[in-house]
Length: 388
Length: 151
Ligand SMILES: [Zn+2]
Image (cartoon, rainbow over all chains, first blue to last red):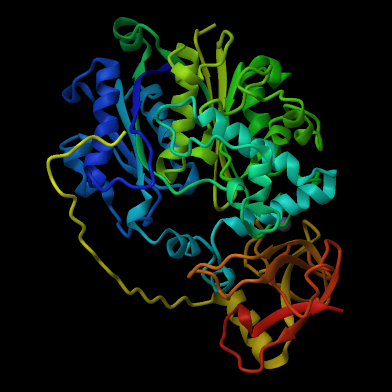
C-alpha cells in the first residue's frame, strides 16, 4: 500500500431482534460514539465518512443523506456503499484506500442494519436476476441448503457436523456481551431444531439482528501519535463470480471460484504458505453452518473435503489451534449491513487483546476476515499487530 | 441489556407498492419468445471458451467475447443439487413442502434453478435425470417452464 493504514478505534451496539427504543440513526449513532470514544477522537477530526448498509432492507435508499446528522457526515466528503452482505468489509476496504491514497488521514466507516423494520425476505428476492431468477426467488435459506446437500454428498459429512458449527457459534456468542443469539445449546438441540429446507434447520441459520458497527481508520503517523494499540490493515482482496455459475455449489469444483481466488491472491500478497499457521484467528462470514465448513476448505485451513473433520476435532474452537469466529460469528449476530464490518472489528479486538470474554487464549498477531454477498462476491481483510 | 427509557416507543407504519417492467434484451427476448412459441430452451455458446451458458447473454463472463450463437439446450437435464423446502414464508413462490434444485440441462455448462415436482421426496437425489413440464398458460417468465420432473 502507498501509505500504511491502521484501525485506531471502533465500536458496536449490542445486537438484538428488537430495538424499539431507537430509530435507525440513533442506533447507528451509538456505535459511532463508541468508536470515537475508543479512538479518543472528536467528530470534527474526522476527514471523511463512509456509510453502508444492505440496500433497501428497511425500505429506504440514500441513507447516507438522511442520516448525515447521526452519522457525523454533515459537510464532510464520503460516499454510501452497498455491496450486499460484503458491504461492511467493502466499506473498510474503501476507507483503507482513502487513507492509503494520502487524500485523507482519518476516515470513519459506519455500517448498520435494522432488520426488524423492513421486509427482508421480499427485498432479498430483488437480489435475484430480474429476468431469470425473480419468479423463483426465496430467502437465503435455499442457497445454503443446496450448498449443504452438495457438501454432504461430495464428502460424506453428516448433519452432526453442521450441528457442531451451530453449537460452537452460539456457545462463543455467550462469551460475547454484544452478540444476539447467546444460546446454551447442544448438538441434540441443533439436530432437533425445526427443519427449514433440508439439510438446513432453524439452528443452522443466522438470526435477523438489529445493530451497527463503526470503525476509524488512520494513517501511520496519526496512528502512532494517538493510538496505544493500532491494528494494521495489511492486505485487502475482492473477487467476484457471476450469479449463474453452477460451480460454487459444487464443492468439488476445480474451477477458480471467488472465495478461493480471493484467498490465493491475499496469501500471495502477504507471502502466506500455511494460512492455518500464519494467522492466529479467523472471523469468517457464515450466515449458515455449512458455509463455515466450506470456508475452512476455501481458505486452505485444511484439504478439500476435510472441513468437517476440523470441526469434529475441535480445531476451530475458541481455544483450538485455528480459532474461527470466537465472537459467535454471523450465525449468532446478523445485522447484515454491519456483519462484514463486525468480522474486521472483532478480529481487531482479538489483536488488541480487548475481546473480553471471547478473547482467544493465545497471542494474536495476525488475523484474517472474510465476507460474502448474494452475487458470489468475496472480500477479505488481513490484519496485524505490528508492521513487520 | 435494554436500558430503561423514559418514553414509550412509537412505531410509524409505511407501506409501498412497487411495480417493475424489465425489457429482456437481445438474448432474453429470443429466449422467452422461443420458449413461449416452440417450447424450446435456448442457451448461448462461446466458441473461444467452449462453454454453453444458460441464461443466454451477449457477453461471455470468462473472456468478454461478444456472443451471438444461440443453441438449443436440454430439454433433459441432471439434478446437480437440491433442497426440500419444508417451511413457508410470504416471499416463497409456493407453499411448502416443495423440492427446489439446480438442473444442468444437457449441452449446458451452467445450471438453472427450478422446482422439481411429481417426485417422491424420499427418492430425490443428486444426479437424478429430469425433464421439463411446460406451462399451458404462458406468462412470459421462467415459470413458462412450470417445473422439472424425474424422467
Ligand atoms: Zn468466452
